Image (cartoon, rainbow, N blue to C red; front, side, top):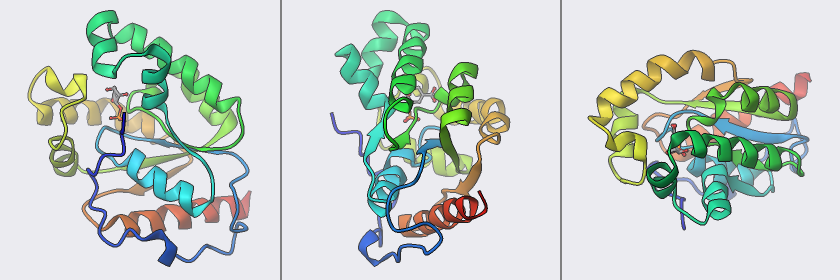
Length: 201
Ligand code: S3P
């Protein structure tokens, strides 16, 4: 299952041309970097670029859940319900956080769980990829694998999720906008924010 969707404009996303920042040695981050944010924010796409930049492994929590369950997320929602999906999500993220530092793209609802949020706060550096509604609607329209967006008008659903979740995502250590700019710009902003935070830590 390839979840590396091309929802984000990859224009100029050649990370080889992106200078490694001087604050943190060009190597790995000392802790797991967890990306949080709504569906379509670019957590997987930007996460992969960040993993390349910091020479770390990239893991997509949704893919891990699918592998563990032997089912797609849509199948889990349909056959077992959202509550069971959320329980699996908590377990998978806890397992990943117990391992060596990685770049982790979490599913959009993961940070809403109090348990997962506490664990992420304790064990990871969290970065909220924030995007505007129009951007999220446009990006998520490119694919149809998200069960939550199939229950009604995606714009209305995403707008409701923004209202409910943005105050919670705002608890992340860092926030970076992920709107309609080349991925390289978002990547650079994320690297600058991460390196600045680690330089003061
Ligand atoms: C969800 C987001 C999805 C996936 C599931 C539920 C959510 O992940 O975990 O469909 O509650 O926002 P992405 O944010 O990676 O699309």
